[in-house]
Image (cartoon, rainbow, N blue to C red; front, side):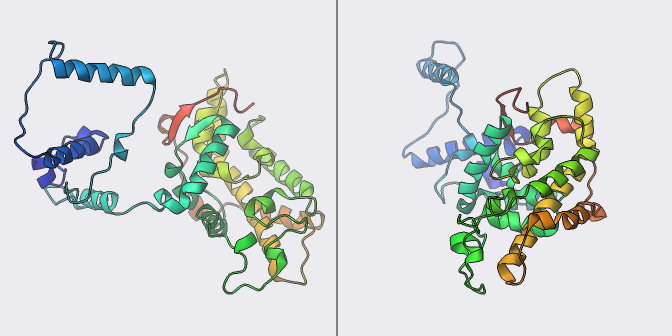
Length: 342
């Protein structure tokens, strides 16, 4: 009860910030949900106590089943437990974090991101052989080294607010079929724009992108170095490029050296791929809104070359993590295959 009174701030560190805290709150709710007198008795382990034997049996069954239960998913009916933090000899910055965690739901965890989260997780698993938690990576769109305009485009795509295809007839947009359907007849979408089609053969521009990446990319055929093979949603890996490369690379003799090279060039590769996608987007949108402009990829090679030569803005550069910190990458749940990159 004291922990509830103090806003759970006086709980031991491994309880206040770790998974057991939701369990303690849930147990408190169960206590209050019962009528009558409640008493606690200590049962010595392995003493043939009946209830203790039942608990051991259930624990063993759960371990053998292989099913995982996330304690943080336990829900407590409103009003039964006070989860609001209080200022109890705690620093103000720590209390601020607690308030945000308890009272503010992260956008990436809301229902409008649910569909994208599922698609992203399945795509990354199939492409690279690792399972990542989308909630840990969706918000990283605002930190990756890509043009700032592209970040907004990707964010809208994630939450289903991209004004393309059947959504194009919105307020403030002219009724042009170019925004609804591609010239090939398929519905317009961000993925369709970035991978091209029979009406927009992007091979000359893709070849230019790959030549630019080859200048500063390690000599390797790993999938993170070949965005032309990133499937129908080619920008998905950008959200977790570091985690993918640090986790899914197969073990071999030169792995450490390759990881160092990847770490040094990661921001340049992010920027190059981001500029490529952003330039394609601008050309296609100009064609949608300007009747006099027609996008012909083979005639835009020089324009793309000039765009790809744009240096990374200094305000987007971030420090490259050292080897020790890179080992503790967040969001990785399972490593499925060691040969996923080959």
